[in-house]
Length: 188
Image (cartoon, rainbow, N blue to C red; front, side):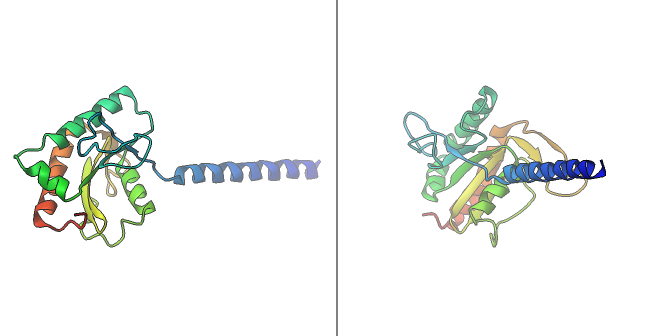
């Protein structure tokens, strides 16, 4: 009786370890990004196929965002394309800036860490709550997060929906334009 009970316990423990391992592996799967494509393929929505990680504006939520998410993604595109003052769009485009829409900041960091781009980044900061801009050796990147959050401190576990992704991208475009105007982008 004790032997069968012990076998059942060991079997349950093994199942639990396998299940835990599977969920850990699933959580570690890299974030996927998809091109935001418009009919005219105008920068930054200049990818050819929405199913690929290409072009200069990519959404990293899912291959098929919800209607609300798609509306927010589209509003951010308007912010990028309507950038004022005049000439700013040309400067940002010449610098080869790429724009992203992620669910969370954690997704942003895991995506770029998986692509080997986070270490040694001179502009690396961990202060962007709803968006961020980085100058990587490979080029200039600005991102908006659908859900805002903190990396550390007393509010680490706190996340909330981004109240205005459009305004967040306008703010990040200021940083992007600053780097592009300084001529520090290597993506020319």
